[in-house]
Structures are given as C-alpha cells and as structure tokens.
Length: 130
Image 1 (cartoon, one colour):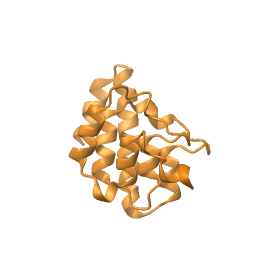
Image 2 (image 1 turned 45 degrees about the horizontal axis):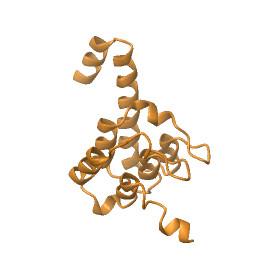
Image 3 (image 1 turned 60 degrees about the vertical axis):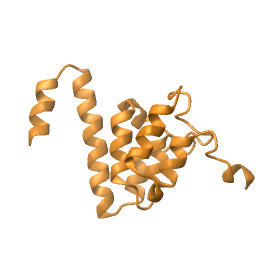
Image 4 (image 1 turned 45 degrees about the vertical axis):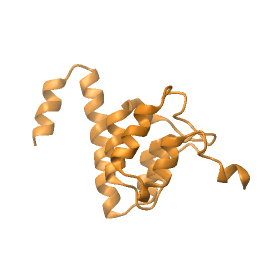
C-alpha cells in the first residue's frame, strides 16, 4: 500500500493526470515544460505513461488530453503498460459517450502525426479543414 500512496512522487505529470479534476491545462503544460528529462519520466513503475494514467480514469479531462497530445510525441500512444494495455485501450474499456470524443482526438492526433512524419502535410491540412 505504501508504494501506491507514493506512486507518483517522482512523476509530477502522472500525478497531475491522476488528479485531473483539480488540475488545469495550464498547470499541466507548465509542469511538462519544467521537466528536465521528459523521456526518462514518461513511464512509471507500472509502465504507465501520462496518457495511460489519464485514460484509465472514468472521466478523463479533454483539456488535459489536448495538452498531452500537443507536448509529447505520438509514438508514446503505442507504448503498452505492465498489463499490456495502450492508453486508447483504457478509453475503450471505460467507454462513455464523452470518452468517444477523447478517443477520436487521440486517434486523429496519432494519424495526423504519422502522416506529417511521412511528408503528407497537404493531406493532413485537407482533413483538418473539414
């Protein structure tokens, strides 16, 4: 139990995602920008990224998800936690109509990032304008 209480002590971004109902998008953005080594602090002892932590909530925050999608590389969405789950898997497992929008946002960000990395920026611009 002690390990769970202090689980996020070394992971402030994870902690803010866990406490999403009392965290503003601006607070999360500043916290991410203050991290000196973002990549090292992306995975906690359970293999969870901030995306996993936020998505495992029954009511994840759209605003915090937008910050995560903006600040972290899309490849993190493909990282599985210690239980073999992706962040998008948590959104599906905790399905609500509100989570539908979050899943759409996540998939669009992932898809647009991939297309852009492949040099298909005109295709992305057309899809974003619709």
